[in-house]
Image (cartoon, rainbow, N blue to C red; front, top):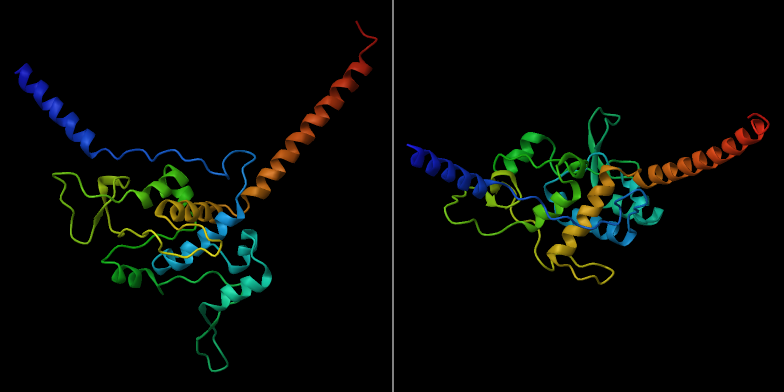
Length: 248
C-alpha cells in the first residue's frame, strides 16, 4: 500500500512538473527602476512593430495619436501617422455617420468594430486590448517578451487543440494566437536588424510606455520631491540645533 501511494505521488509530481508554466526569463529594461527612462529609438521601433504587425488584431484604445509625441515624433509626423487611419464620425447634417481620416486628437482605432467581429475573425478568440497588457499580466514586460519568443514544437504527449498553438510561457501551453513575429518581418528605418528578439523587445518597450505614458514624469517628480524633503530635513535639523543649543 505504501509503495502504491509513493508511486502515485511521484506520478502526480512528474505530471505537475511537466505542465507547470515556466517563469519568463528576467530581462534588463531601460525603463525599470526609479531613474529608468524609455529610449526613444526603441519606442519608435516598437510602435512600428505594433502598427505593422500587432494592430491587425489588437486594439490600443487608451492611446491617442497626439500621445505619440512622447515617442519623439514631431507634429507633422503625428499628423501623417494619423492620416493613415480612418475613424467613424458624425452624425452629419443628414443624421448619418461617416468615415474620415483620423486627427491627432483621435484615439488609435481598433481593427474590429466590436468584440463579436473580433471573435469571428479569430476562431472565437478575443484578442485583448494591449493598452494595459504589460501591467495586466503577471511578469509584466518580461512575460510579454517571453510570450513572443516562446513558440516551440509541443513536447511529446501534448496534443494541441484545433486552431491553437503551443507556447511554453502561456498557461497550459495552448494559445489561440499564432506566432506573430518572424525574422525580417519589418524594415526598421534606422537600419536595426529586425530579429524576433529585437522586435519583441521593441514592441514590449512600446507597450510598457502605453500602459503608463506618464511614468517618466512621475519618476522625475518623485526624485524632485525626495530631494526637496532631504533638503528641508537638513534645514530643520540645523534650525533645531540652533534653537536648542543653550538647553542642556
